Image 1 (cartoon, rainbow, N blue to C red):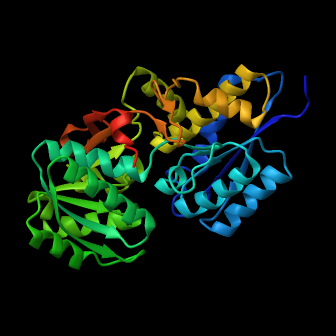
Image 2: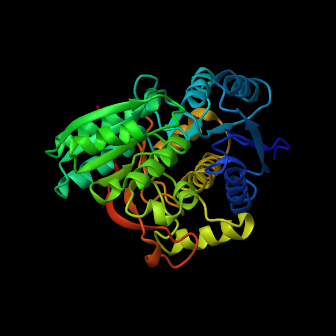
Amino acid sequence: MSNVPIRIGLATDLTGPYQSVDGPAGADAIRMAIEDIGEVAGRSVELVLGDHRNDEAEAARIARQWYGEDGVDMVISGVNSDTSLAMTTVAAEHGKPIFVVGAGTSVQTRERAAPSIIQYAYSTVALGTVPGLALTRQGLKRWFFITAEYPFGLELEAHGSQAIKAAGGTVVGSVHNPHGADDFTPYIEAARDSQADVLGLANGHAELLKAMAAMDRMGLGDKMKLVGLLTFIDDIHEMGLERAQGLYFADSWFWTRDADSRAWAERFHARQGRMPSSLQAADYSAAFQYLKAVAAVGNTDPQAVVLQLRRTTLNDIYVKDGRIREDGSMLHDIYLLRAKAPGASQGEWDVYDLVATVPGEEAFPEE
């Protein structure tokens, strides 16, 4: 029995604009997994936290220190694609596992794929593909995009457009907003003039909230379907159902999915006073599945643990029959959800309905 604990690191935004969707509550979700597993291979388990402050250089520094000096065995990469790319580069250099939970860029499983990188929760591929396929198949064939002018937004539009065309639809136009844009009125006017069936908002959080506020002022939601290509329960909760009602979005998990999800979410709520985001559930699952793999092989040897993960069917409160594809994508169901009307909600966190379930093989298409 070793006296050295197994160390799991979570590097995410702990204090900035994305802290609510992951952040300290995501860290507590990992603690829940550690508590549920207990000792592994005769060793205790320790959580190490790092606040990357949405800065690439700081994220890389944290990863180098953890892998190279502090004996961290596995890292969970939280929100922000740029910081995640910095950390996955370091993980690949050290050959140690990194679970990408809060960052969606598809670069991590395509141009920069490596054996130790696992894209665990979602990707721009899935977030664009699922609503593109599901809604176009329902007959909503004309799409317009408002897209954030940086790689993450551009990836969302590109993958969504590919799915729309594959399902027999067409993209009638798009406009690109600069990162941090405040006035979305001109972009909404362009969408209105396009006479599209669906408006895809290929941006996230602050920009999504501003776009939805502009939509509300202009009453455009009555004329076309709205899709938030990166939307979490926190966004719906913040904008309120009066404004969010009818908004479609894809997500990797939702707390009302089944009895296991509900039971775990209630445990989380008792600790945090809120329901978990899909990222926080994925934080739990990533730690849980890593520790199960360590228990199965009897040690933390990176190659042995990664091999065990890649040959295992993953099941827990978050993932059902998941498997890790050769490129590092964890294939699992992705859900198309729709925000409820206020009168249909039965509580503060009862905010969405399930519209469609898209299996992993279809949600995460290969190039």
